[in-house]
Image (cartoon, rainbow, N blue to C red; front, side):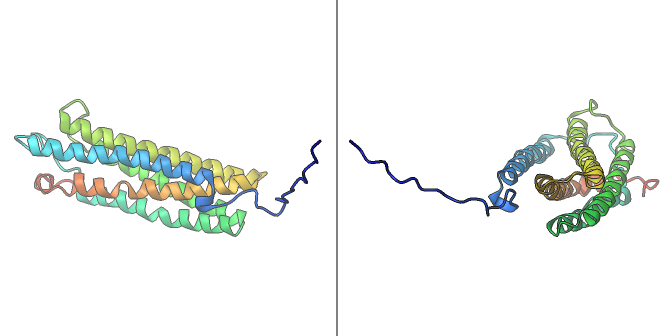
Length: 212
């Protein structure tokens, strides 16, 4: 005959239902996404230098710089968009829903401006994606990054609507804060390509006087 052993009971009622940072599994999921997408961008950068090292003429004939001014402005808008995204995350930490909504709305405006400027840059390119390997690389990389800007902007719009209409749960606050974190990645990931693509000395030598 065996005696019943006492059952230990753990009171978890005081534990938070949502946590921020590395304690959250969703945080690790977003980190994994950024790692995968970062590797994709790294492959594009390596491909650029591989093509550059094997090409007899770089850039190919007919390529003209789209304009230092507009390419720099496009990057500057992206980097500036990190400020309202950061302030939105800070507001979320304070559970200031109105402040978070307003800063997300500002981030949306920056995202739309970034998309318009990127479209203007692509419109100034003197080659297409099927013109040569150089064109394929530039258009593919820019297209991938535009997709990131677009989807990030749509997500920010959805958070503006959610924070306005509600109901807002703790899990939504975690999602919104991580979306701000992901936006930093979207903005910063274009910095190396701005340097690689638009500050290439060989391309800078082909600037057109008509393009700012």
